[in-house]
Image (cartoon, rainbow over all chains, first blue to last red; front, side, top):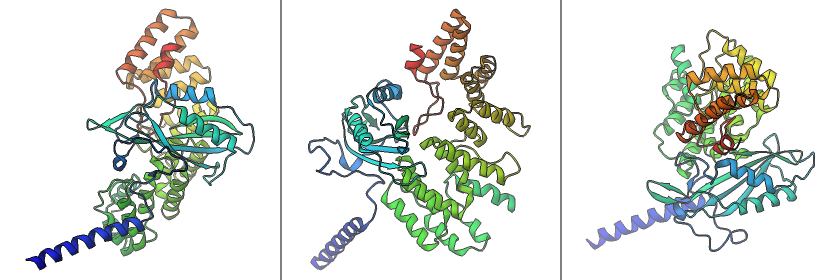
Length: 170
Length: 264
């Protein structure tokens, strides 16, 4: 009996450890686009209801939710952003972040591209400004799914033409 | 049999579970095996397991376009334009039937008007009919999407003529928001008579807050104060009843928000 139990335990442990190894070796995070904590950029005390169950902003079927709708969000951003006129500043900048179950934000990450979908580094005066503005947005609505408060990933895409912010998505 | 295949391939492009027998019928064992390996995948598109399943399918058959398209979706929905474009381009390089989907997504998710027009015009050049496809949700014909792109690029007259030509085609069935989009384009071109004509037609098809808002604006421009106030109130009520343009992923084209209706 002891031998059976020992063998069962050995198999169980080896299965678990091989799962861990597989997870560690995978080039993918748990979900595509997951943002892990990074002490260099993120607040140590940013509270998450459930780190392992962060959903996407569209999972509840309600899409982007900001007090006053996207109209208010857009107006807030446009009132703060100052154009950096430069004919080379064209393309899209995406800032993705987490809105926690209280409607607070953190873990901001930036990617950007030119008009042909190639990675592009925008002028820091543009990206730094956008990051600061995004961090100041305080009217994100907390979301619930199945009656439970959830943390969620949200992104904003900024479209630029000659250094002018011409559209905000999604 | 060809007819059946023609029906099946659009289903593949929409990302539904593929019918693997299509590949078997074409004696393509490699794609058949790759297809069988993902036939029962029930992981969420964003998960590691989903991505890895499709990576394995690509290992079995490196030209299995369906797998690249399937992998691209999570990147699209998370706004990762760079990885989405690499994957969807790969799918299209192997199978052009995904081109209609890319065209729509360029427009819907990234407001890449020129890119969407390029894809749609290529599709039109390849087909002799208007049957080139629809938006991912089926609410717009791609030729209307092309017109909306031209409208966004401020080529209003071109957008109008594209829509009028399509709507006059006897084989075309009007979609849910066609007259709204045409009416708004006329409004933006300051042709209020035609704007009112098509926005009124939209009321009969599916009345939405945005539609009533534009009708109220026309009344306001004409100086018809009572009609303006009534239409404005109708727009507000429709909005409060959730009868407005909505999409959970992105802001619909020519969407109007409650604040705008109330403040103007």
